Image (cartoon, rainbow, N blue to C red; front, top):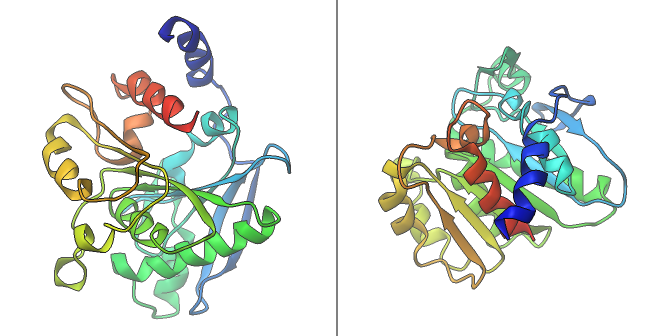
Length: 239
């Protein structure tokens, strides 16, 4: 099986274009202007929503959005209000939230993800959305997927208890009953495994390399020596 998959995977990882096809804006629930990059293939494909980690922006997915395109998804990488910059791409949503004196803590970004789901659900003519999260946003997409009927699958990279006393993620996601993929670095494996062990989904994949790896979706970047293994595990999950 690996011999058949690997050539396709290597071709996918060597995709040369890393630029968004289109930058768009729409409003969050409290009036903050959300900026996002669309990586569009065609109308027949479902949409994948890509959410960044702390201090980052939609630029986190410059390398990986095109690879998800190759796996059969339109993609939208979104700036959440809790972030700053990544790969020389500034977080415009965070700047607008600051200008409008809106709160920008991790949990405040949940409404941005909800607005992005609603936008893509309409954009995709009611096709369900695949959620992808990184670090704090990985925790948020797991939480949101529990009872949002517009979501079909979740990919969460390095989720954790990032919200202090405001939210206990482990207890809030036990009823998650759609396909879920969780990945992390080798040193995060024990904590992440414990976090999601009670999730009831019968289609649950937990992946970590035997050593090394990266925190968040940086695991998929070509600078990570384990990137090919992460991509192979994702391909098996999605298929």
